[in-house]
Image (cartoon, rainbow, N blue to C red; front, side):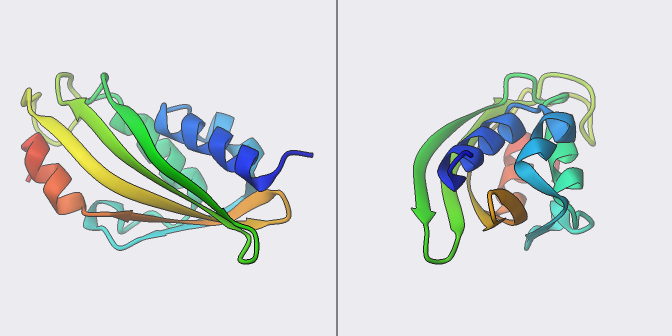
Length: 138
């Protein structure tokens, strides 16, 4: 059995590299929920929908990558927190506007709540307004 740290690390990488739910589901409860106080994610309520949204984000931003800056396990509260910076350039079709050539550098945090050895809920902390402005999408 993997520790929640190992599971969270594998999930984080799969999600952030655009593997979608097909890859991410093995780390999550089937009905895992999702929340974020970000307009761009307002309609997303499941972790399945979020991981597929991330997969789609890499279409208009094909060079998108993350730099993991902090990773912490809170055994007492049964959660894992990851802080990272996402970087990329809008160079391909698929965004809300034609490719802008503009770059994004976005700080964000995932808080992954576990039930047993699977993620049951994830909260994303992210200022989407700044990211959308950087990309020329808002």
